[in-house]
Image 1: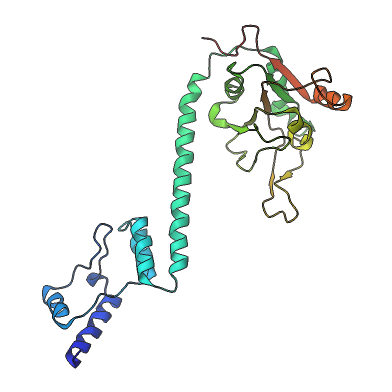
Image 2 (image 1 turned 180 degrees about the vertical axis):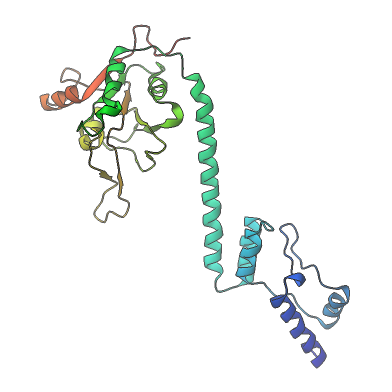
Length: 284
């Protein structure tokens, strides 16, 4: 390239680096626009080349909404910028969080709409008695709280009945099926959002192995513990209503419990409300 070509090349790089007027990256257009026609013609004549932009500029365009996340990721790779990995991870992290927030908002909206359908349920005095322990005057005066057990056959409406007590959108439902004696993760529990927890398809062994957690005591409970505690987390369960739903929950030695001690503990800490004589909790 002649000296004049080198000079133009230097001007070209300077304009690309210092003037946003000469560089406008669009999400649906992968070429540079904004150059005067004469400068573009000269670039073709002297064989000048396009220069990759910095990750800083790509992030700025993406944050301004002038570039989609997918296009921004592609441009970060093409930039060969040493800071590319951090920029790439930042965009990916943001997109993951956006999807998570949108999913949570959709679920909340859906549950609020479905909550209007949870009205035609059969009342039960045993449930009313269980609810009394969660009155405001009990806060700070009671050390432990009893569990409510809804036991009965499938399709009886146990889980829906349980959600109707505090509202579907305010109830955290945890699926306990297939976990043996272990509990599902409680990490999604948020006391600002959840007024109650439903343990669906829970077994008596899961309850017996998590007494401190399920008695809703005043001390925070640590879960997810291991030798390193890398995945451990702590939750506040004081005065948290916990409802057990099960097709076959053993409450006595006659039902199949191993010891009388297990029977005594379960009987002392659980209020059972069996399915009504009609075989279902809801009214059609």
